[in-house]
View 1: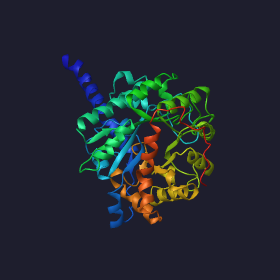
View 2: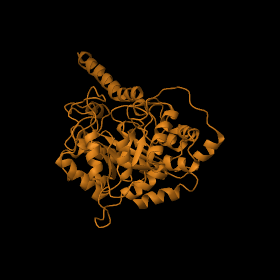
View 3: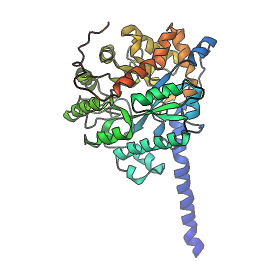
View 4: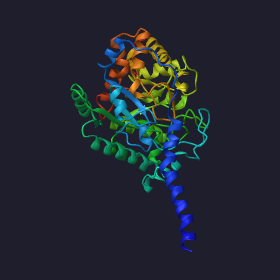
Length: 403
């Protein structure tokens, strides 16, 4: 009789262990791929230059997945060993809190969420199951734990002094990789402006207003209405600028982008995406929007996946960057991989020398490569994460453009 009771429970326990133990890893392996297509030949010149760069990537979603980011992984696009192999100085790690079922680039409602089943399957703390804010705070704690365990190999960056300390440490052999927290969609405020203080205290220093759906702040390029900023959104943008949280317009609707650029007093990022001139996809920036970002002194992080550059080749990445350079100047270009964000790419972060080579092939000078691969991002982030002194900031968009 005891066998009849316990056998089904044993089967259920084995099935549950299989689901919770295997399913999240399998899902990630299917969503975050390297396509295996041929890489471009890398010259000795590119290899030598690459080793001298301070590389910054504005966007990855590694914290979303249940794996040890300090250990080499057989899935996904990055971990600490691969960041080291790619010579990355600073990686910006995004907190993804909600994503709609049937996610697409054209139109998504806000009434469903794919992240909740992933949160449960990964056995995250129960407090994260129903709270988007707590999901982000969990991601922050996850990064903090990794920094502690890494014993000097991973360094959290949340202010200019920590950034300067990182760069000084990297001047020595085996210097650390820096890590900064960002947010993909401020739906994690849960409609309360005061929650921005909690996110700031946890170390978040860049935040996108929207993700794949319209939220309380603004319309998404992939939402149903695709509207502009709401009054709450305008309030939050002002609070972000005051605190030293850089505003990210990636995924914003075109109306939202226009309204953010019009009110911006500080540099604005488009952390990951492309440009419509080389890849006509709705989320990519028009030339007018590129000029608007440049006018704020901001950055455009170019991604590596097909919908960002209409290919996965490093040459497609470099072509998008060349368009930005020729339109407004090299000082407005950065890397925005979207690694581990449900993307298929040509190379993982250990292969970033592919971008260095592609830029040289497009006749970027070594100094221009240095700027694109990280110099620009270091400059803008260092300035952007300083809390605002209202007496030192000129009115928005009053500086004459250099083009």
